[in-house]
Image 1 (tube, helix red, strand yellow):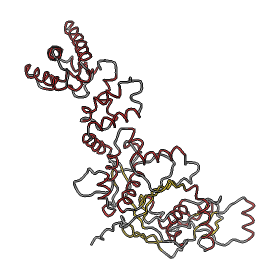
Image 2 (cartoon, helix red, strand yellow):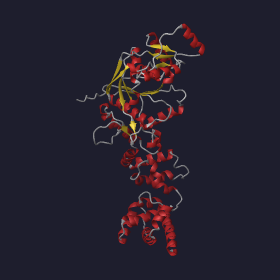
Image 3 (cartoon, rainbow, N blue to C red):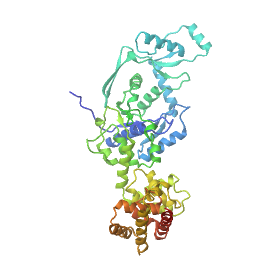
Image 4 (tube, rainbow, N blue to C red):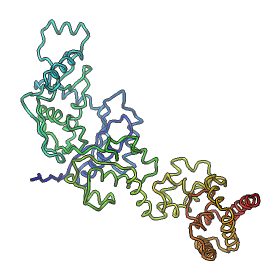
Length: 490
């Protein structure tokens, strides 16, 4: 009988602890989201802690990008950002307490000596773990000093014991201590290692639940040992599945956008990214795929997080994003689009009326966009000098006579229009289509090419209205002139 999954109840104090050594990737953003949803859903607190003790790789630029990405997603934090690099004194005090308690010891072995230990263990078919020597003769210590060796502090693992994690996602996971080496808690320069700093900070910050990727599960028994040696009670743990690409390999740049900044640059909405991330390893039922943030806060449950690896599919995200775009009110969508195109630099140098033209074109492009970045594919022709793309010219010159007839008929009807509204244009061209007995595609596609110079654009009626009568008729006549010249020489 399957064990019933537990749920996190009561005010949960959780944390998101990224390392500012690069962008906020999709996996990290999903971890942040799950923690944020738990905090908001239980009336708890979401703590942001930057684990920036890697001095060589941590950068202010990466930190700023992580904060910017979280803010864009709407994942606000209640405390922080707290920086681990500023907590060195606290970590040092913990090392001293562990030393006094006899939980750690100075280890003087060189890397070569440690490697010999690992090889011997492997040859004897034992776990290749490291055990430092606890006692040294004075002569040995004097020699080490002369050689310039500096010791590290290792945790003295009780090899006869075991640590069990009652995990919210994975159930009970037990680690035999015989397979855990005497891990380093403080380097030779006195700085804390990740496991010590994370354990001390979780204790000191009062974290009640640690929700993180399953790739961290091997660190958990070590951190629990440290906490208990310090006289503290470890938090409860939930190790969520890794995120894979559609090919079931670990998610990377080859699968498309791998970071939140990439997704933002490619024109995804924060709410669609949040929605997609929530569905990476979690589901509410077998059919619901669209959730507002408020609905996610209400419905999210750690008990419904799967043990199996999650798949992040950029194609599915694009479909989801398109749905969100189409359900956004026109006025709101127009401002979102203008803000995106302005921020991306797209509107630079396009004139003072460019933003207003974007607003006017927004309702018609909204129906076709998968991402905001696709705007140029549909409406970029509005901002470029009129030119006929070779591919479009090839389409209307397959049957020059037919193109002359239908484009000429369209020109004739538009020349007589008193009102250049979308409704009037639609009525005139639809009436002409029926008079000629043409299919919609065979009649309207040449009209599109005549005025846009491309085969992909906003809707034909809307495109004509956006251009206005003067520019529209000029483009029709230009196209007709080229077609007539070609017909005469054929």
